[in-house]
Image 1 (cartoon, rainbow, N blue to C red):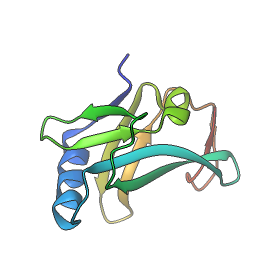
Image 2 (cartoon, helix red, strand yellow; image 1 turned 60 degrees about the horizontal axis):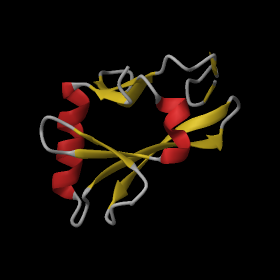
Image 3 (cartoon, helix red, strand yellow; image 1 turned 90 degrees about the vertical axis):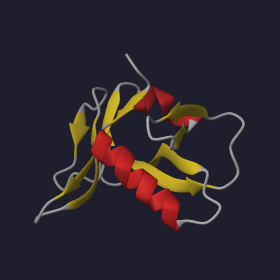
Image 4 (tube, rainbow, N blue to C red; image 1 turned 45 degrees about the vertical axis):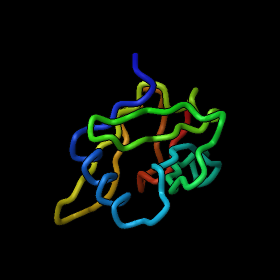
Length: 109
């Protein structure tokens, strides 16, 4: 099982974000305590490469830095990009989730 899998659509969108953000070396993915179910996915630009992060290098050269404290919650997750008339944003299919809130913003493991 891979740490995290990023679809081509998500990788291409991340590459577009990186091209617009001066000084960004990649994206950091992690989780934070929030929402009605306990955890939310958290993405932010990385300008200084964290020494302790696991690095997932995508086929297009973009780097995704995985927060070490979140690995146990993210293991096996598939990150995708959705852009349709109802929603636009990253989506996550996480085999570790045992529940998700009604609005889909937070999850529990």
